[in-house]
Length: 398
Image (cartoon, rainbow, N blue to C red; front, side, top):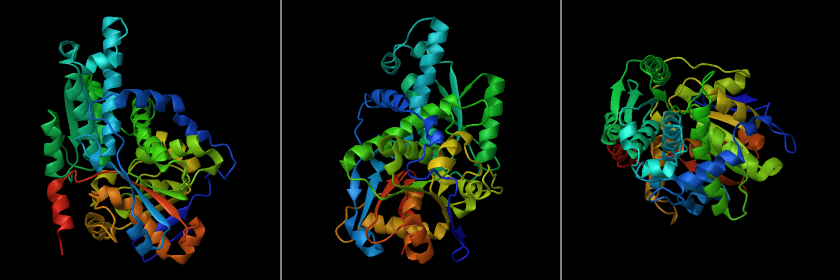
């Protein structure tokens, strides 16, 4: 079931999603044990703390919801993004594996972080492609271990995000083309040079490292569930991209609530709606073009097959929406509505909330997803001002 709305957006109820009470085979891609290992490592990092969970009751009243619950990732370490939980964790896991193979003994990740193996790692190279935030996490992780980072970015990644990665010591290579082109080139160059690719998307034969990345992301969802203190939301809205974050949160919801999990809806920019297109077709679909969207962290034209194995079962709905929805919502959050705390939300952080607003205002869509004035929606605000110049331009605009 779809509705083209005003021509700029669309929504889809996933007919393949598991019904309440049914088994969810795809969610088994990510495990409780993988989450446990990621939590044990990440929670031992300096300055680790769960990010805040805000109840935006003023905004909820304005929009016609019982509650809007906002997981605020703008305070996640020094990276101001949930991505800090994934790429850096995977770099540490790969450094541990490399050292154990080279030295023939068990190596503790804590000793790697303490600097005990910087000499052995100084010529080891990690490579990735990014829209910005994943690359920052990988660069941050390589700084922890003392190895090299080479990061590929595409033509429309902002200069501010490029400089942020360079600030962590990474070599950043800008290419012509889109995000998916940068992923392919990074993989080819890494294979030729003997580098390790630490990607947040998967492809045939490359799944173990993205699985580590996604297990790191699951910690964000586990924090939110603990902070809810037994109060289950009715709906969870998640940003798309290649699907890694959405799959990690959806799998965590399934592990915790099982058949009683909330309705899970995935949101994307209309210029890069590969998950929506894939759900609509019932098979992976590549979205062509430059994927140029204000929501830079979501500018992906190809789904991660690993993430899709989860989302095809637990993604209840998919939405795509125009960039023009983003700036006004960023400003609302920055100023606070009706006594709400002011929230620093980057361009990609508001996509899920923008989708909730679109669906609530459309009677057919609202009925299809059970959205009404009793709904308690959980939003994952995936980034803060990761490009401060662009953020300030948007929130100070008239």
